[in-house]
Amino acid sequence: ENPMFNYDQRVSFIEVISKTGEVLWRNIKSIQTDPTKDTFYTYFYIDPFDAVGEWAKVRFYGGHQATFAHKSGILIDERDLNITKTQLEGVQIARTDKKGW
Image (cartoon, rainbow, N blue to C red; front, side, top):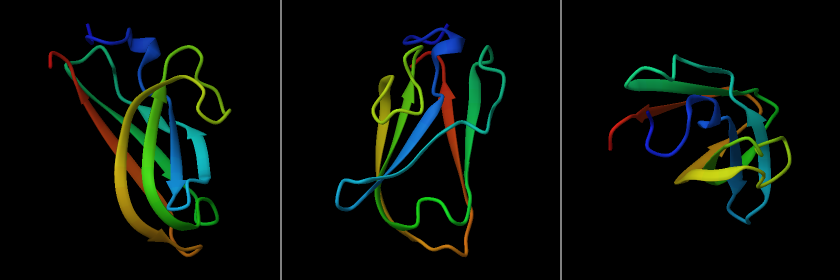
């Protein structure tokens, strides 16, 4: 078992936060590998016209309360970034979780 969540409560949503603190994009995971394994992966895909601008952070949310509403669910992780995304690029974000930490 994951020390924090049952498999159905793991990371399910991501938010991209701009340098001004604005939520540029929030969406549900694209795919997640088998979370009963010791290591599993969650992927998010951002279309070219979404989340355009200067990124400062990505936040990962999970839990039964996670929805498309900003800050809903349990904040599982937050990562600082320094990325400028344009309308010409799609982005895939891959997250790796391991049990037993």
